[in-house]
Image 1 (cartoon, rainbow, N blue to C red):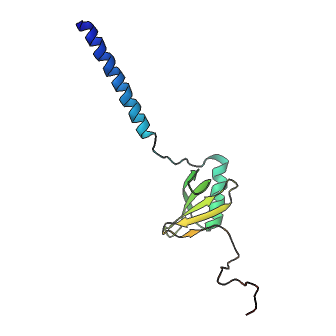
Image 2 (image 1 turned 180 degrees about the vertical axis):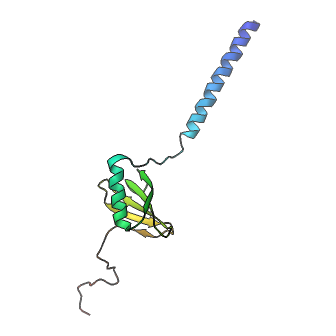
Image 3 (image 1 turned 30 degrees about the horizontal axis):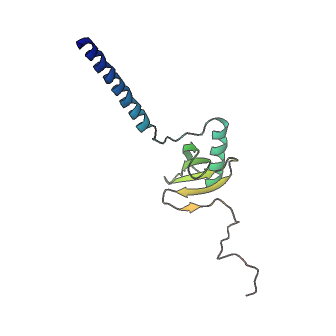
Amino acid sequence: MRKRTRWIIAGVATVAAAGAGGGIAVASGGVERDTPITGPDLVRAEAAALAYVGDGRVTETEVGDEESYYEVEVTLPDGRQIDVQLDESFTVVGSSDDEGTDDEGTDDGGTDDEGSDDGGDD
């Protein structure tokens, strides 16, 4: 009987250890990891982002960002960071800086709603 009890205790301990390991795997499975852009897509994404911001250095990239298909972080010479959002065709669809300023990414030729001509007579 003692031999059988030892085997049961060993079996229960093994099952418990396996269950605990599975619990740890499940708990760490929820960690979100950024997937960097690679290969030819990286070259295209960097070029599009740098063309959009002007001057700077690409410091981070991500595929499948919550805001767009690609995100490229550019650090400007003055130290500010701009996150440039790109779609699957590497078209800029938005951007934000580290100060929280957002831009939709559309170029309206430098006019805004207040300065545009609505075609009406004044």
